[in-house]
Length: 558
Image (cartoon, rainbow, N blue to C red; front, side, top):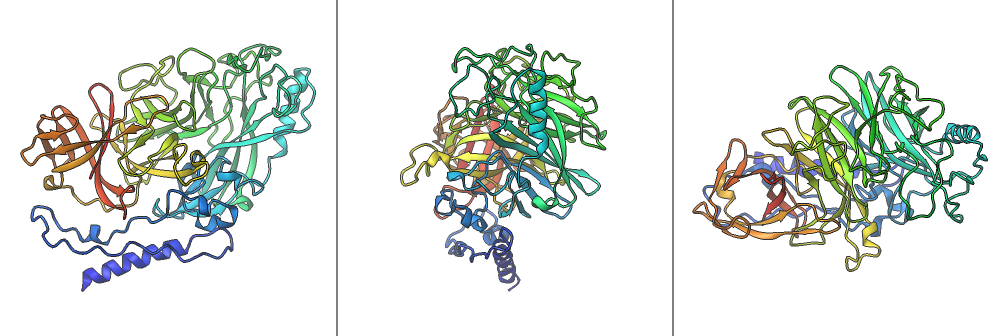
């Protein structure tokens, strides 16, 4: 009797979570019915334990194709629909808050404020909460035109703004800060919007600002604290010309977008930022104000290391246009490393995530092979990459991540994922941007492994060896520009040999205490997650691994 009461209580709690979702005072529709209770196995394997917690668990039911609910009027039902460039923090009220770039399917956000937010208690069910900023603060245009006046350029009178990639942090003492990017999409030479004729100049600079709140909700509570840093150039004041739009020798050295805030164990605050131009910079902030300890030089051109715009910590290759963006720097007290996650390549399909680490927040950062993050063309390992299991269309554009923990040693990776181009029955399928949250496991030598299936709060019951025999879907996630890596079948035999697929003929063994499956010399780290491609969805076992050749492997039990 107690077991049935427990199942009823869990089901009631899930319905309550869905019923609590909403934006403002909008009415909330009834949730989609949960999956029916499965029929008991008539002949259960006696070696596989019966876990009531797994029996009671129910998979998320919201669809990956959210286009029928993509409009603004359906925002109460979005859950993780229309998420791009997320940042996640845990607040003192027990909620996780997620904020993002202004990007949505069919521009559903347009006209409804900026840096939209949602919240969740379980990282699975999210309620949309609204914008955190109603309009660009006046200081952005004032600062831009002040710089332009010193460059003997005409004032911009019709700024075209982009609202990009915030980072939110709980900085303690009941205070929360958000660093945000506002990009000016006007040409430097004439000040005209980029929709006008090309004027042989680069587009204008971006600005990073900061706002604070004591309650991490919507726009009424956030107070803007103004200018932090802007895009800066190591070229001269007038060296912003561009012969044509195929020239990529960018004017700016540090592009003031994609900020991340790192708080060290000693209480120091560091802002790391930059994308695409000449790499990432990090600068120290005053924890009391959240503003730079060293105020950046008044003239943001001809800068040097002493100009206050930050220290270079990573650059992909040596060029000024180096296909890397979105730094995220976090500290893991268990490994005592700082980890620099970054996005590589174009966002619509090829987007993939890399990571390097350092003992110091300001570097030097090195990858898993020891390559320096300043100058290496291809840092390894590949953390995420476009992929496809055997069922469903798979995902592409999986990068621009945030990384966070729950305070109890559990780590998570969140990013957008996009559906591939031309998925049948979905208009503009590659514009479908679903928020992804995935668990992270850490290898024995301290590297983060992002799980191949999205997090769905599957109970973390022990995995026993008897569950491992049979067919698996295996993906070699090694880098391949713009291509989804496809799954193949790998079979683990009861005789402890791989009988089909990758590593066929090798022996396998399992360490239940560490939940590590070893095939030959390759260690695969296991976890219980949701099989999102199954119909109906169900719990399964997945693995992730870095190979001795620095390849990345993902897999799941069929």
